[in-house]
Length: 138
Image (tube, rainbow, N blue to C red; front, side):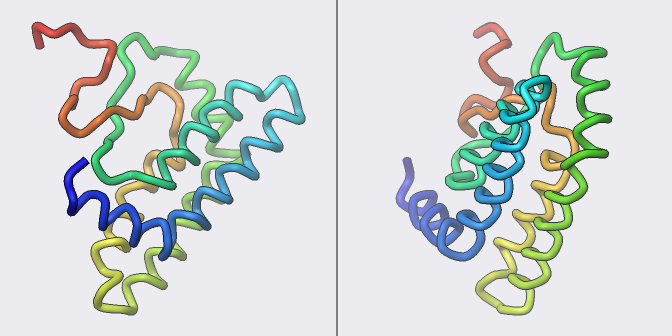
């Protein structure tokens, strides 16, 4: 990990990452308790871990995600996605008030689509932009 990424991740964790991850952990816990929604809980847990340490990683579309991911994303949007997106929006507004927080506010805004539609995506290192599902030939 590059020193700048380490610094950004530490600042992110302090300013907003812990609280956003907590929201995703709560969503995951509720999904795990309801049993039928365990796949949503797995996606929420994956996003929670991403919220703790996002710099140096990115999200890409998962190859082969199809109708199931689309249907799941619609259900997720109605049940939990928009709540988490509001959390990102509120955090962005609070961070944007400060000069130091503006880059983190922008990063929070870029995470809103992931909060709304997490299924059919995977988190990869930034130096691996196509994801694990793609061959080395790409």
